[in-house]
Image (cartoon, rainbow, N blue to C red; front, side, top):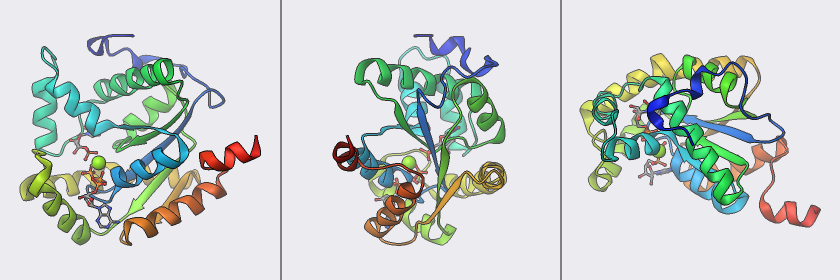
Length: 222
Ligand SMILES: Nc1ncnc2c1ncn2[C@@H]1O[C@H](COP(=O)(O)OP(=O)(O)OP(=O)(O)O)[C@@H](O)[C@H]1O
Ligand SMILES: O=c1ccn([C@@H]2O[C@H](COP(=O)(O)O)[C@@H](O)[C@H]2O)c(=O)[nH]1
Ligand SMILES: [Mg+2]
């Protein structure tokens, strides 16, 4: 598996995998919209491999000897988007590991792509996504959730200064990604201000429309 420092993944001009080999669903929504919460439900029922770009960056930040540790720390604190070469290499490495060790071929990629250059580079060089699951939530609700989570999360960016910066980055840099995918009719939008269970019921309904079914149903069909 390529070392993270090689950063070759984003440079390829053909996708590493076809959409027949690998299914990727991007999961987007503002900070605190509930992406991780919904992904954990989906993992249990659908057998997806959940990869959170933020979690992978935090792991790399804490990996002893990482040459990107300080850079990642600074970007996360400021709510900025880490240069795409780092994040795409981390994602590709994690996908390869899940395919080899767990025979996974269906991925929920949470909190990515956060910027148009990442979206284009990932789909050009790794694999085209099936669609983007977008959790719509107001800043007021997201702020309440993040401040509450911040009491126990230990995350360096769950504080009011970082949260404001994350909201700004989300509007200015990440929403254009959602808008581009929306124009391509590849966005599934769900109201994320409902209870977690109601959000999940809506997600399941929408996935069905896209031909994505829980493991139980797949077994019955087999
Ligand atoms: N539908 C919901 N209603 C109320 N609280 C929720 C809901 N979904 C998630 N939460 C809570 O809100 C907080 C943020 O949720 P979560 O970590 O899933 O968001 P996220 O979108 O992954 O955030 P981030 O972008 O910061 O990673 C958590 O404390 C979670 O328990
Ligand atoms: O593609 C990405 C995803 C995330 N980041 C940085 O990580 C933090 C935290 O992300 P969460 O999804 O909230 O866990 C985010 O604010 C960015 O600073 C990134 O750079 N690129
Ligand atoms: Mg999250």
